[in-house]
Structures are given as C-alpha cells and as structure tokens.
Image 1: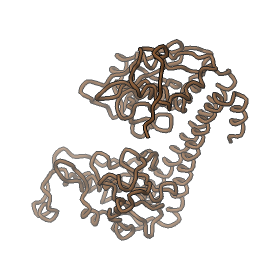
Image 2 (image 1 turned 90 degrees about the vertical axis):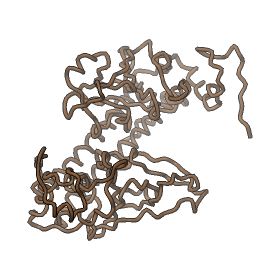
Image 3 (image 1 turned 180 degrees about the horizontal axis):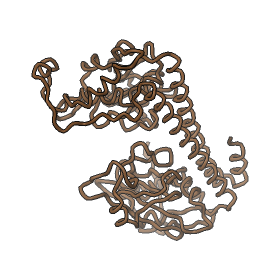
Image 4 (image 1 turned 135 degrees about the vertical axis):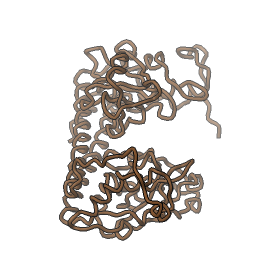
Length: 463
C-alpha cells in the first residue's frame, strides 16, 4: 500500500523543499521539539570542516588526525587513528579539535554518525568529510548536545536535511540550522556526567586489553621487541623453489626474526591448526530466504580490543554472496586481506549465529582459550606470519593453504587464564559502555517526550 502525506505550500520549510522525502511521516515526531524553546546550532557554536594532508600522507606519530571511520560508540576509536605532522596542524588550526567538541560525519556512507571528542584526545585535527562543532554558549553543556544528536531527535534532523545526488552531503548551513531544545542546566549536567561514565568504561576497556597484550608479550619475551625491517637482503634459490614464491617481501628477514623468537619460547611451540579448527565458509543463507540474519564485514570490527561493534541486518535470500560463514560464540575471526589483517574479533554470545564475510578466517579453538587466541591473532605473533603469507596481485590476501605453516607458542593453562580474565573484563567494560550510552540517549528522548523530571529519575537508576 502506498504511503503519502499532504503538506500545504505555506508549510514548506527553510529553503522551500519540495522533495517528498523531506515530508516523510517518519519526521512528524520532530514536532515534539515545538513545545520547547529551541536554539539553532549556528547560534551557539562555531562550525568548521577539515582537510587532508597533501597527497593523503599520514605520519606514524604526531597529532591525532580523525576520519569518520574512527567514529565508534559516540566517540573516537583511538585504535584506528592516523596522525598528521605539527606543521600541518598549525596551518589548519580552524579545524583543530579538543575535548567536548562534537564531530559530524558530513559526507558519504557514514553520514549521520556523531562523535564527542573524549578527554584522552587532548588535541587533533579532522579531514574534509567531518564538520567540527564547538559549543561557545556557556549555558549549554556540549556533552548534552552531542547526546542529543546521537538520539532519535538529533538523527532525524540530520537525515531530513541530507542533500546531494551522487553522494549525500551535509553543508554548514544545514548543520547550523539544526535545533536543540533548551533543557535545564540540571538535566544537561546529569547527561554530561553520564557520558563521562561511558568514557571511563571505554578507557578502562582499553587499559584492560592492553594489560592482557602486555602479559602475553612479556611471557614470550616479545615486549618492546621490534624486528628490524631490512631494505636489502638475499635468499637462497632453493628456498624460493620450496616456498613457490619469488617475491622479495616473502623473504623479508624481519618475519623470520619473529618466528625464531616464538621457537625460542621455553614452553615450546606448535602448528596453529593443531589447536584450532579452520571453519570452511560453506553455509548458504539463501536456503533460508525469509530468515533474518546479522551480517558481519571487516568494517564492523573494532580492532582496538577485538570485538564486533556493529552488524547489518539481512534476509537470508538477500544476503551478499560473500556471506558464507555462520559464526559461533567463542570463534575468533581474523581478516585474510592485506591492509586489514588487524581486523580480528572474538565472537560473543550476542553475535552467535551471525553471518560473516569470506574475507575472514574463522578459527574455532580446540585446546586453547578463545581470549588467548584473540590476543595471539592481534599481536606480532600471528600478524607478522600472516603478513608474510599474503600473495596475489589484484587482491592481496592470505591463502588458506598457508595456514598450515603458521606456529603459535604453547602457553601454560595458568598463563592463559590470566590473559583470558583481562580480556573478559575488557569486553565487559565495553559492553557496559555501550549499554550506558544507549540509556543516556534514551534519557534525552524521555526528557523531550515525558518531561525532565522523569528523565532525571531515569538517570538516577543508572549505575
């Protein structure tokens, strides 16, 4: 059945929009803002867009440089961040960011995503696909504003104003015209404190995972170990024939340094495939055409602590041709594609039964704790070996046949338990952060729909 709505010419808003999508009934809920005093964003803030360094060249260290793919959980994911040099940062001070700034993804596939710059990002800069909003009005809590735009009422405004044909785009005029309801200082500050708790959980999650990784590397004698990447080296012709490889990268001595260190581990080492089952991608979701599935791709992995942070909903009959893996709780999925090998995640209870792309390996632990397998897969132990095995021209990836040569150290069960406990605590902290963020967004919506008193009571029950 067709869905339509009728709008009077006198009711056309702003720039006299006449496209039907602008008046979709889904946007009627924005009328709830009319009972409040509202402020437009351009009246209380400074808005600036960033730029990318010449040639798209980034640095290994320097000033954090944020791109929209870094947005996660309402803040910036520090794990995937790149850097710009200090000179570029100084030349582009207008787009500098600091804690409390609100970032809008303004272009392309990530449009509508919002991040609040957390305290751990002391300073930074942004690319041209991001609009930085800095609240200048002292009576407005920037964390409340950020949470408002993460909530239903902020997201509806964003998607209502999206323009562009080939590529969606939000310009500064549109962002500046977004309306924020004026709530009391009390509820704004309560919401700000709630976001700070989210931030604390996230930072604790990073810290706990880092401790797990450090514990593993110290056990293996790999803490602070940096294999020397040689510019020139030689290899035996017999080795090339044996490996069926003649590309220079395969024989990079740095890779062998890592393998040598693993083999020196006092407790011994073994082949990876003796301790995990490499699950074949032979699940066919099209046999269940009407069943709902969650689908995981490389972009859905938060590589900072090895979790699946988002999924796409698909019907079995409409699943992508690459969706041929059926995940099980406890599996560890590892990217097989060069350039994204760090995309590694442990499948938790929430994502049991999800589909996953054939761009992953799917390791099912046999006699190793899954959390330990996760950390091994994310550190130099497996990353170096996987990188060495990459081959191909158009799409460089790790052939499944090469997994038989990969080795892992044989950690004692007590060491595994220590590492696993830290990873479990890390993932639990991230889970709490996600839950708390959802509650904070809901509190914003309750304040708008049912009043501030009910919102404050709702927040008071959050621990």
